[in-house]
Picture 1 (cartoon, rainbow, N blue to C red):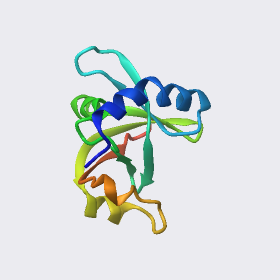
Picture 2: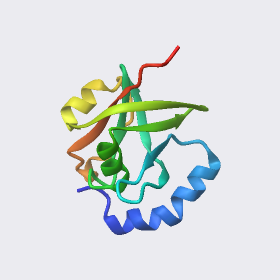
Picture 3: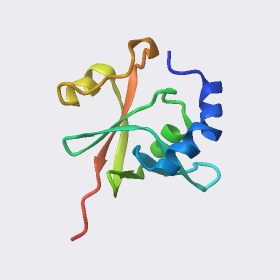
Length: 126
């Protein structure tokens, strides 16, 4: 079971602003599917061949996951650069873990995450 929704709501107002200010974690920049507002959410993102794998610790019903799926793309700020990610899709745990390099820290088993978000990198316009 992913982290409880009440914890996500609390983090939105406490943890996230501090993490954004530090600038150390990957940040997904996404557009609200109803509001049209731009949001920034710090999260776990792992570079994989041709894209990024995201760990939705609050589950795939989190606003940021639903926003990215609805929009079909987002921006990801990581390591001092910003990239566009496209073609978001949910994948199962076995598929996700097969994409990660050996030794990559996995989410705790007690979270019982069943789905992950995989995206492609947008082709750069040179």
